[in-house]
Length: 152
Image (tube, rainbow, N blue to C red; front, side, top):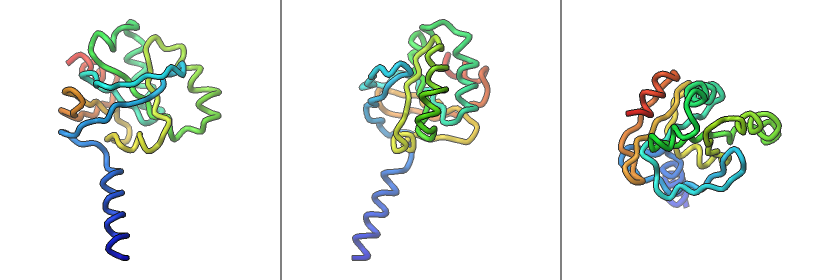
């Protein structure tokens, strides 16, 4: 019995580990800030990911200065993990603010999905993709660093 429990714990810890370079990212089935269902079957070249309010503000500082097609032109997508946010706060404050953005924000609302992606406190995660495989992982902290990373 102990061996079975131990094997299950190891399997669960591996399952919960964040994606690493060389791993394939499963198609993402998310909604945007307008509640529009979007499925990323094939990943864009660059995934920009924010996991905290401060990093989301930095992303907006960068993307808010660009035109509405900036992410598409650079084969990028922006994903914000709002799963830790209480749904009342998301619905009453965060989403109405996001609906004013000139770009699409894909939203992670399920904590289990958010935990699959690598993150560093106070940093924006940049995943470079080749097909659905992670080619590299970078972390940036400023709007200028983010712009440079998107335009690589």
